[in-house]
Image (cartoon, rainbow, N blue to C red; front, side):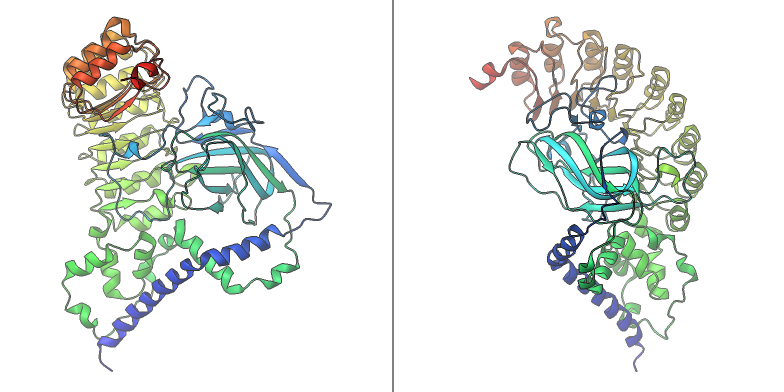
Length: 578
């Protein structure tokens, strides 16, 4: 037999696996329908009565429209019984996420997407809720009161947040998921997806949402968890389940968002070492690398186990220049980082958003990873990474000298003193501090030393005492600033806006939504329009003082303006009659 055949056999088997997986996906709708029918026909004994409970509290979330110091439009409204349902409409007593639609991805502050992000991962925001009693879930109902359809994934966690003893193992299981779909109605509905059964009780439920197809903000009122105290038994109809269906479900679940493949020592696997690698010996190294660049991260790890040649290619650090680990947040832990460490010496973009919570990643594990992989980092996404502490930010400042892009959005558990380390990152061009506890002293230090900043988000930073001082420092030091988010800053005045506009003439995006201390009568908005002709996006949300003159100035001077938010104003008659 020709030495070409061993390698061709391996590749043929891998290609066959891919085709078989696609074929399963194409017919998966029918299989899931039958499987869900069986699940829905399960019955519990009279002694195992169903428990119905509303959420006790909201323990974590990625964003919300409301203020940190109020209850209007905040995620905390999801706790308890409904406030609005079954009524429809825009109510302040509901939970509302910060964004909707696709226009947020088209504004100047939007960041580029990561390569190799699996198409199955579509989540943009999340909220986690706890319930009084642990139950085996039989149903999860979401009460949506305005523009429904954003929820795309529901998960359950094995950990009990109210237990005094930390669990030996924390597991997340997907109860239900689907791709974003358009709902052609804005009215209230009780969303009741068919969930799968899990083999552990839970009182911690997570909703993940995608609002990209919505015409307006989605509003959620309450979440209802149905379940039994004892594990329910399936009826005899389960005997009709095809075992192949169960295997396919398991395979798809692992391929979707688990990291089990990353937690194996591939170097210990017995790899084929045939006399020849066939035609692959004749292909340029770069061409093989280009082909493998189209594989997802789990597939890349699986392929590394097939033969020594492909193991070498799959472990090449050039395959990990962009590393997006956010889709695998439910399984990523210290062990995952350890086995990725040797491959990530050249990583430049790293996304660890949503990862590491509830003990999955330790401070020491994160520090070890960055000490090996931080030297080339240019972009680091750490949104909602609650394992971070002062020591972690110190490691980032020391190990990532080339860092230009740092996202700490909703890292609201970071202590205020930790942010002082960011001032050491002199090359920063983009800094996201939305919903953090950064204080004024640390922020002034950052602005003083990070003079190359082009994108800065300070939305909902409630620990800053005087935003006029901050705006003055931005105007004096950040001459290259292009985008600035001051959403819900509580005390900026016309003086701060004047300093800002005079020093940051290159501004293309400015968010002054829900800034109640800004008054049109001072002429601040008119001067803003005249001094910032490059504006493409301007938010003046809920500022009731904006008048016709302000809109006329914007129309005359800001000819590049594409996004203008004046929601909540009283000038619609003027606009609709021009």
